[in-house]
Length: 104
Image (spheres, rainbow, N blue to C red):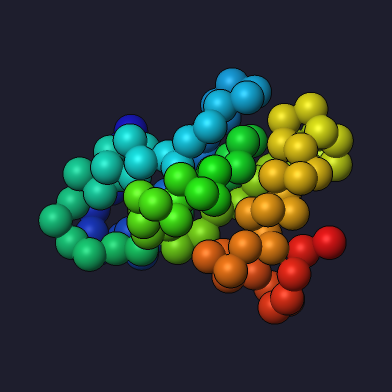
């Protein structure tokens, strides 16, 4: 993982593709990201395949500013993320979604 410097970085982020069925809040990856600088920067999962588990996030309080699940097979089929998991994450009162309101 490279880090060009605080003067050119606004947001710390990673692209991650974990194995199907992985249940995670991506805490380990968060800790790795924040270890590259002492500066306070927003931290994001720029592109992921597997949703973070919303219940784990609520418990661990990993402060991701956002996560973006890659499209097509990662959200349009249930091969990687179930419809139930998508609804649970994006409909959770712990998540901020746009447009505001429950995910259906």
